[in-house]
Length: 134
Length: 134
Length: 134
Length: 134
Image 1 (tube, each protein chain N blue to C red):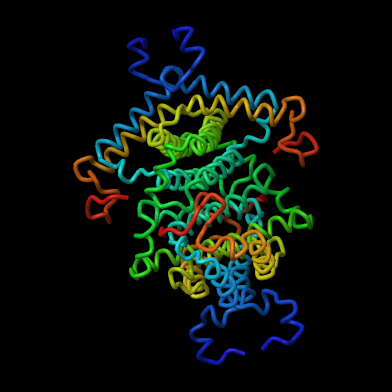
Image 2: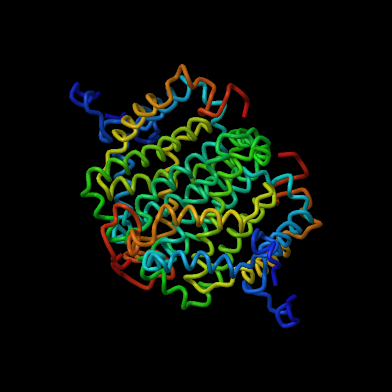
């Protein structure tokens, strides 16, 4: 049970997926927007928000994109786009009745089989022949 | 503290964002993949997974896309793509030090101001002149 | 050789791919932007513009999206986004030295083998069991 | 009129936009696929192909992505994805009755006003304070 302090400043440490899904679901229900939230439409909205997130990094080198972590103004803008992406992800889970945490746990088991840690350490894929900086 | 039953079957009701971030972060660390996880690269990976998610709905009508909720095989495939999208979202949050739940709460406040419930009930935007099915 | 009238109003009937590639290439060269136009960056720009194009159709039914062809204002906006998508496609071809028309002809031969007309008439894929409207 | 040699090896120098639009349009008509080619659906297909194109550059540095121009096998794969992107762009133009070359010429005029060459030489945007390599 969260302490009063935690309630006042909720964070990823204390917030469950279900709580965020509820926030998103209430927002949709209050506007009667479920009629627009067919999985097809929500998947488009999600992809559009993912593109807006990418836009922040579009012309930067991979190295320069790391430095945005030190820029509070940029970070706030990126956080808004990330919120949109995760928000639509949860809206899609709401429409389809999917459990997000279960889906992630299951997928990570598959990923671990596909990319065994000892074979892929420092390599991003079969065509990558070894560690590099990027 | 989760009961043993909850540990055995973790779900969105009992899983915090921080727990999922840890699962994703451990996977990346075990492979020494943070070197590839510049925000620029992760934002590309996220957009690619969002496109793979869309692929399931690409040729369907909006109405037909809702019916996939009743198709367990399709639903499992969609769940995998959704897991990839949320997984990369959390990987990006890990790289940038963003609190996802805070970002979503903040953005939903902004959204509520931009789309007041009484003005947007049953309308998806300014150019939409009223309720319709879709 | 185009007649004076054709020069005054160039159209898809009289414009070669090479002419459009030149227009895009000159624009990039005049700004010394080739330094930003790594294939990675241009592919991101292209995906971002594709998302902006999608945005026009995001909340519409598939049927309603067809009606935008009759809306000159919307059509002009869509034309701008399509121009961005094709423009970045040509910029990428310029950077990589690819012949677009050859690539399309080759791919259409492959597509015709993958989707024989007699097997796919009115069906969008293996899981589609017959004609429908959408 | 193209010489026999040009007909045998058509290229961007000799191919008009209208010729490519015809190739794409015939392919769609032979399969009775216009019923699936609502602008909404085609815009999704286009965005999905743009993501597949990006996938080739996803984990590379911007510099490394340039080196793919020297790798014939990779270049052929990239050419196929680019063909899909441009192919769906032309399919959308076919459905909406848009002239692609006119749209690009119009947009480049707008772009030249938005990004005057003397102000943006070596800078990708307002927040970019000068030339750099990337």
